[in-house]
Structure formats: structure tokens, C-alpha cells
Length: 163
Figure 1 (cartoon, one colour):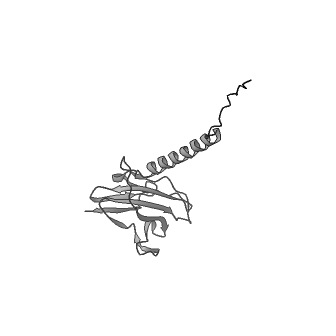
Figure 2 (cartoon, one colour; figure 1 turned 90 degrees about the vertical axis):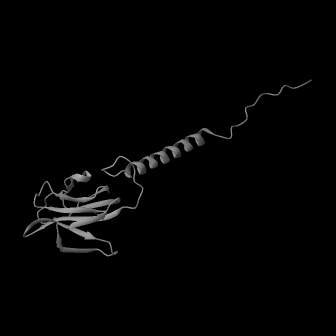
Figure 3 (cartoon, one colour; figure 1 turned 180 degrees about the horizontal axis):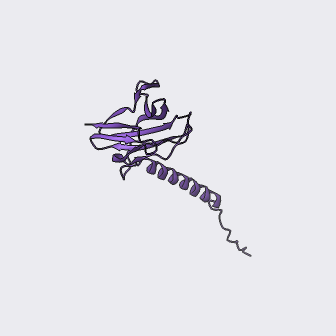
């Protein structure tokens, strides 16, 4: 007498849990790539710029003479703040990706500060005391452009894009 063998399904080497894990990992990677792609787009262009940004720090504050911007330079690797550089003129080579860091250091009046550069579509939100905002833009047009505050019209300076 011949016994019939039952057709047993072989266990699949890929389990349902493994499929879910791979799908979650793929979604996380896709989300990370999307985030990096979106954050690599400066405010004044419509495509990503993958370059090392040149950091420019602008402090917004005031003294007895009024409100002003001060530049904080880190070009030498050391932080130096000079109140002699009131409403500084900033020079940047053309084609530079700029990470503009605006910091409200006006602790005495508890007032809000802002910074705008119309030529490069740079507009910070109204920053409260010790708030900061970083805006990336591409210095893609030669010339001298104004930056200013809407909240404090006496605060102004220039940014020059050199050839």
C-alpha cells in the first residue's frame, strides 16, 4: 500500500515581518533623502546647491546711539565681536553659498529684530531675544545690495558680491 504525502507548503525565506522592516527602512531613507534635497535649496534659487556654505553671523542689538547690526567673524577660527563694526559691509565672492545666521542679542529692550535682503529673497521672521535664524542663499549676482530691518529702519548695511 502506498501512502499519500500531504503537500506541505515550504516556509518562505521572506517573512511578513522582514517585508515590513525593509519597507520601514526604505521609507526612512527616502524621507532622509527628501529632507536633504529640500534643505539644500537656497531661498533664492529653485535647485539644490551642494556646496560648503560660507558662514556669516549678524548680531542684532542696540546701544545708547540706537539699534544696529554687528558682524561676528569666525574666519580665523576664533570668535571676535567688535562693536566698531556697526552695520557692517559684508563682502562675498560670486557663486558662494552663504549661510546667514541672524541672532537677536538685544537683551535690554526685549524687542524683536529682523533682517531682510530683497535681492536674494532673504527675510527672517521677527526674532525675540536670543532667538536665531539661519537662511541659506546663493550669492549669484555681482553688485552691492542693502540689508535692513523692517522693525528698526535705522538698522542697515550692505552686502557686496565680488566677481
